[in-house]
Length: 503
Image (tube, rainbow, N blue to C red; front, side):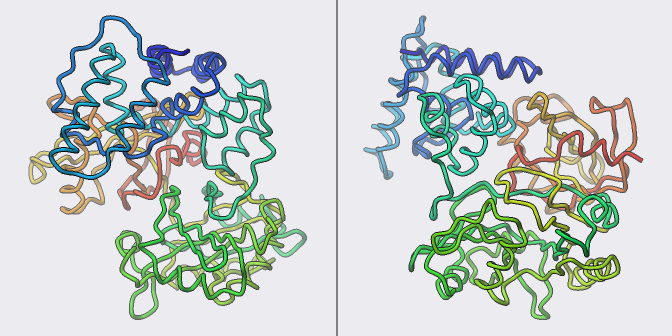
């Protein structure tokens, strides 16, 4: 049996080193000695999650408990998982339920050492989310199971469940058995920033040859993944949060499509009276209003046939047959002049830019590759907020100047590359001041330091070499576009992407 203290120690070692190899080795060593029934809970905890999902434990309950920590580690992984099961089973509210929940929590924390208790409080409070470790966890599972990393990665992306994937790999199961399953969301394929239309066409083209590219509108909406089986329809967001109840218009539209089973990838956005798209934040806020319009750009499954490994050219033909006029606007195998016109048409329609996609590309679930490239009139990056300074003058009393970090795939950490206070409205400043303390790790007299979880889209004029920040680069004229609550820190742009924009 594995003690909780061993999991806590491994988590601490991972947090204490910047070496990706060291992180992977530490995690693989722990995973390799877990009992079969310990793999799923321990893997979930190391990724900052619980198998039980919500347990009903809020910060008020956590703060109200005053445990007497144990001197030695005796709690096993199985003990803790069983306690979390009991907590999750205590549904509802009221004095009786609250008292039983507090008693169960108190008993768990009393049996834990001080370090274990701190770990459990952070886990229950949602403070152990470590999305940037996802890639390292996959490598660790592969190393511990002595199987190819790509096999683990594909199984995870299709299952959407790292604990399940880890259990299969570490118990000698068949990872290849994981396939696309209707009504089980897959990680969405992601695009990389393109330097320019010409550069994207040069890399993926020739545009009007074979296999060629498609140039599509890049909508400024909310990513959706839609599954249908018979009359049942379910919809997930970019982060695989189910939003079916918030989008009845998409459910009704999907039910009317000429298929029995289908899996679609697309965007939904709020539209103004003149037909032009509303800002992204309004699309996010519009979920549940019944006023959203969906557009689809990929089909991963139709009527019993999986299409993930088919080229985009085939998937797009199937998609057109299924969704008709809900196919996202685009031009297939355009000439250079037609591609330029397609980009101009997208901007004229109020979209944020265009997507250039290789027609021979397969659907690489969860991966950010060069086969899909975003082309926008100005550079934008999705970065993570590392800290925020208190404002001065008119901004006194507000959290204002944000510290920006890019993801370092080599370590799983975030590298600071700049600061900005530009582009912030009074509403933005108010939101930052109210929200950021919930992510606080510590503070000093001039700044609040945050867990690296909040993603912000930054517009910039360019990147230049600089020794001022640890990343070795600095952003030129950076300004806030919006906060991306539809993205996790694991989806933030990498330091390599930022460095590639250097002037």
